[in-house]
Image (cartoon, rainbow, N blue to C red; front, side):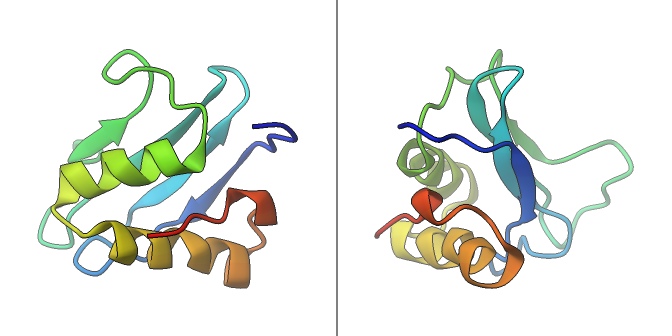
Amino acid sequence: MTDLIEGTWALLLPGWDDMSTWGYDSGTGSFFAQLTNNNSSDDDGPDVWITPGQYPVISNPGQLQTQIAGATGATASVVAEAMNDAIDDQGAPPQYRVTA
């Protein structure tokens, strides 16, 4: 993927939408997600941190979508809707749009 733009956006995934985020980090050259279940406290950090080291480098939003779905049990289409909300309402780059 070309034209990668660094940023962090809210991930409005049902049941995970209070504190979860996703984005792209140019320092690691990877997309990432910090996922905290709404029933958890964020005092000790996210429940799941999808980032290089714990996961391979994620080079495109579709790969991140797959990892988020696997970590949360959400369907790919629900994750796509949550990620695409960041494009439609939060100013994330349009090239990060994913499909189910």
